[in-house]
Length: 254
Length: 254
DNA sequence: TGCTGTGAATCGCTTCACAGCC
DNA sequence: GGCTGTGAAGCGATTCACAGCA
Image (cartoon, rainbow over all chains, first blue to last red; front, side):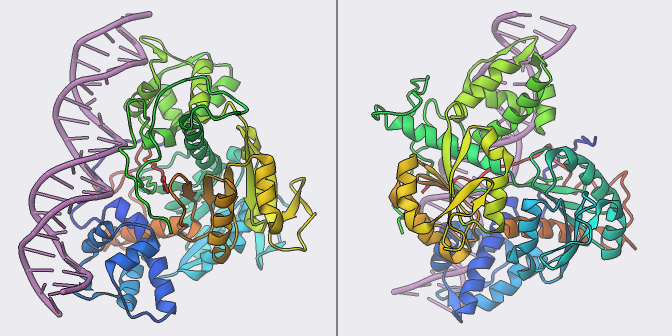
C-alpha cells in the first residue's frame, strides 16, 4: 500500500507543464527527422504540422524552455534538438530492465526505438526458469531471483513491466525496493507505489475500449443506418461529432 | 492531409467528457473483478481505490452516465458493469484487424485482453509474402494485397497498426479508404486522417522519454545529497507525489 | 515583412463541500 | 448516519491575438 496522498500542485516555478513535457518527445522526433534531412531552420508552423499539433501550442511549449527561436526566421533545428534532448534527460544513457519476456516483452526488447534514443536495455528478466539463459534480441534472459542484484549492479532506475497482471504488483514492489523509481507498466493493473516513484501505464484494452466508445457514438449519430448487428438501446440524442482535437498524454505523477 | 477542422463544441447535452470516457474502462475492470468475487455493492470510496482514482472524481464521472447509485449504500456492481459496458459499446462485438505482424503485432494478436472484452481479432495482415498463411495466435496471416477485401468482408471499423513507421501512413490511408474509422497506432509516426476518423497512439519511446524527464528531475532535486539513499519519510513537500493517478488520454480526432 | 514570445481570455477537468436521499 | 449526486470554486492547459524583434 502506499496511498500516501499529498496532492500537491506538482508544477513549481521552474516546472514545465506536464502536457508540455509529454509533447517534447514528439517535437524531438520531428526535429530529428528534419536534422537528418539537413534542414537548418524550421518555423513553428512547419514543425507544428510535422508533430501534429498547432503552432500556438508549440510556441507556448518552447517558451517554457527558453527563447530558442529567432523572430522572423524560426528555430535552429540542431540547437533545438540539443535543448530538448537535454531537457528530457536524454543526453545521458538510461539503463532499463524489462521484466516479463513473453510476446510483449520480447517485442519490447526488439524494439529499435529503445536503444536509439538514450535508452539501453540493460537486462531481460523472466520468472520462467526455462527462459533463463536464452537470448532475446541478443540479450540473455535472467531469472527473477536475481532481480535485485541486476538492478543494483546496473544502476537501473527505469523498469518496464510486461508480466501478466497477477504478477505485476509483486514485480513492481521488488523493483521499487531495489531502487527503481520510474516504471512503465504494460500489465492491465493499477500499481501502488510509494511517493517519489513515477508510473506510466500503457493499456491496450483501455485504448480499444475508448475507440469503441467513439465508434459506437458515430454509429448512433449516423442514425437510422440500415443494419447494425446491435441496435443501441439508448436512443440518446447526442450529436457530439468527434472532438475538435485534443491530444493529450497521461501523466501519473507519483 | 486532411486538416479540415470542424471544431465542434464536442460535448453537447448528453456528451460525456473525454477524460471520463478514458476512465470508464478502468472502472469496468475493477468492477469486473468485484463481480467475479460476487461482491454485490461497492461504495465510491472502495471502487475509487481499486481503480486508482479519488472518489469525488469517480462520482462525478458516474454522474455523467446517470444516477446509478443508491445514497447511503453505494453502487450495484452488476448493474454498473452493464451500464458501463453499454456506454462503451462493449455489448456488441467489434471485429479488429491488426496490420503488421512483427514482434509487436504477434504480441497483440496473442494478447488475451483483446478477445475478452468485446473485441475479436478478425484478421492479421502483413506485407511479407513469406508470412502469408502462417498462423499467429491461431489466426492465419493474410497479405496486405487483400486488405480492402478483408476490411469489407468482415465489417471492420477498428484497425491496429503495428507496422514500421515508414509504412504506417500508407497502411492508414488504405484502412481509412476501406472503411475503418478508428485506428490504434503503435508506429512512431503522426498519422494524418480525414475528419471523422479517430486515432489513438501508443508510443513506447515517448513514454520512456517522459519517465526520463522526471527521473532526471529527481536526480537534480536530490541535489547535493551524497548518495541515493531514500529518505522515504519526508521528501520535500514539493516533489511530485504519487497522485492517485492522473491519467488522461488522447483523442486525436481527425 | 515575417515569425517568435507571451499576456489575457477561454475551456475543460478536478476538487470541494454540502444538499438530498436511503 | 452514511453515501451519492452536483453546483460552484479552483486550476491547469489551450487558444487567441498582438506586441516585439530580426
